Image (cartoon, rainbow, N blue to C red; front, side, top):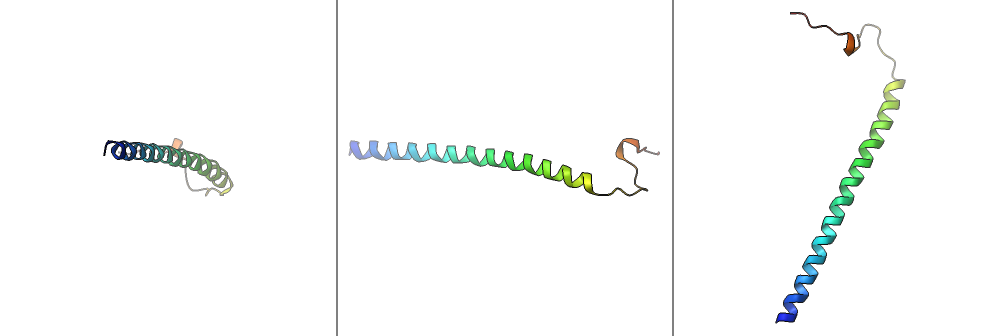
Length: 64
């Protein structure tokens, strides 16, 4: 009975380790996709023509 308990314990710890590794890989993939979307979005935003009547946010003023 002790040997089966140790076998299940080792198998459980191995599966938990694999789960943690997969979670880390998923978060790294998410980070890379965010960086890729930032680069792709920046190029797309640079190509979009701006409307002449829209003031940039840096020049916007609040009126009370």
